[in-house]
Amino acid sequence: MKTTPETIRSMLSAGRHRLSLARAAEVLACVQANPRRIGQLIECLWDEDAGVANRASVVLEKFTRERPGVLVRWKPQLLGLLAEATENVLRWNLAVIVPRLPLTASECRSVRKILESWLDDASSIVKTQALQGLADLTTQAPFLLQNVTDLVRIHGRSGTPAMHARSRHLLKRLTRAAEARLR
Image 1 (cartoon, one colour):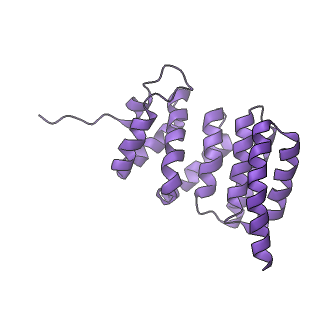
Image 2 (cartoon, rainbow, N blue to C red):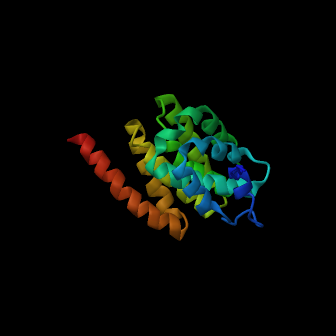
Image 3 (cartoon, one colour):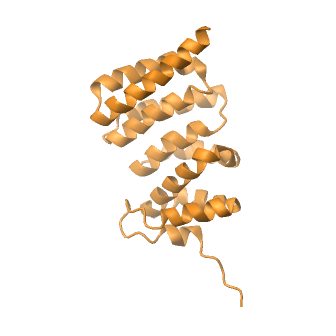
């Protein structure tokens, strides 16, 4: 008798609280072992259960650190989700996931606008991850380097302790990138 594998969604719905990671590590291992299941994971980003969507974004962020190319197929959907996301965990993960996608100059500008607007968010983590995403975006959009460096300086001085610490790290990286462009 053949058993049906458990769905990604059912694994992600195991948490009682929307911020619980529940079986996220198990889902990550599952997707790493069988990357064809990434579509099931991505579908969960739009789940009506915020906990499922949050956990899906956590898993996707971790998975795409090593394999960002798997997302190319879903680029339009992810760009749309970035523009409409309201759940904090989803937003802070999308802030670093989307800049990993190969983006056109126009898409980079759109992503920059969205992430810049998140710098006014009430959540310190959303703001900090938006800074990270903006800095990451400059890798493929060097024309944003000066603007992003200025934003990191400003928000690094006026933001939360987490933003101060992240900004120091990002400024070093952005400064090296700017110096490399001048050589």
